[in-house]
Image (cartoon, rainbow, N blue to C red; front, side, top):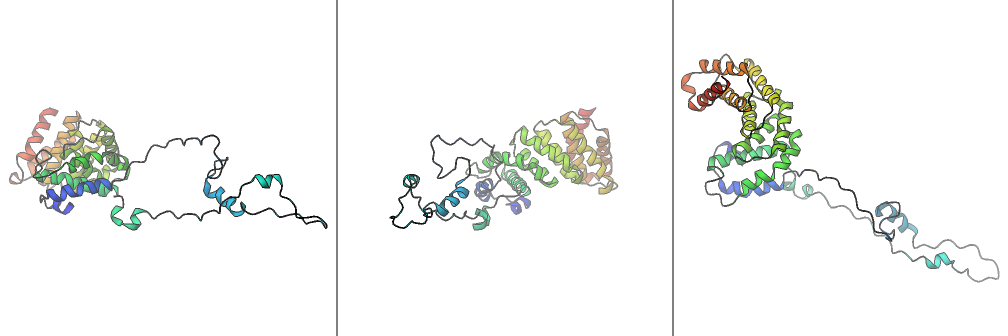
Amino acid sequence: LWSMAHLRQPCPDLLEAAAPHILQRCPQPPPVASTPAAAPAGTLGTEQGSSGESSDGEGASLGAGAGAKAPNKPRRKGRGPQKPTQQQQQQPSSPPTAPPQQSPPAPSAQNPAQEPLLPDQVALCLWSVAVQLEVCGGLAAAGGLRGMGPLTLLRGAAPSVGAMAPGLSARGVALAVWAYASAQVNPGERVLGALAARAAQTAASLTPQGLAMIARSLSHFGHRDPKLFTLLADQLVAQLPKRGAAQPNVRVLQALSNTAVALAKAGVRHPPLLGAAVAAVRSVPADTWGVREAAPLLWALGTAA
């Protein structure tokens, strides 16, 4: 699926078939711990003792000698066999203890295809799905899709994305948040907040394109975090000298333009970023960029004026 998305080759059948399998392998958020219910009154201690021990420990000790008789005292001469005491008469004989059952192997040991996906793998899958939806014409007219598998995947995977956000790499954060923005599926403010927090932690290792992807995608959903947007802009401006600011290319210009738009939507003013964008417009050859890069930047400049 990633290869087809990377080549921008539409494959609606593969997209529809792969969506439920990806969702099935998304790690589920940990359930909320609940207080165990108290045992009903009058329950015998054959499965659980009065002290709360499980049957594994207590059952083994009972099974070792539950059916054995206590040793008799030595007989005296002239007397018959000793009668069992009243306690021995009332104690029922216990059935033999069954051997401990071995826990079944994990699903991954039987079928590697059932292993949960890693956080960055989930992000890459969501990015691939979003690119396929873009190539196929979007959710409204997805080029022959017969079901709603991709939309179900994006919505169903949102809780997992929020829970695994602390384990995402910088690239994984950019791919995940862009996927939801591109597919026009809002994962919820809690998920966006988790992705934003992880983006702040990994901003130093993001490329200009990754910084722009996160800023533009978060602003698309109206996420307002002035500190985060300022941090992303600072990192982008700081990376320009060591990433070829003397010879900027159209990708750098596009990253500056998209980040400027994101900051304008969030109401954040960042003069160094706008200055770097204007300088890039003057330096990048005019035949390598067009309306796609110029229009957003002009809007951002007008909003910041």
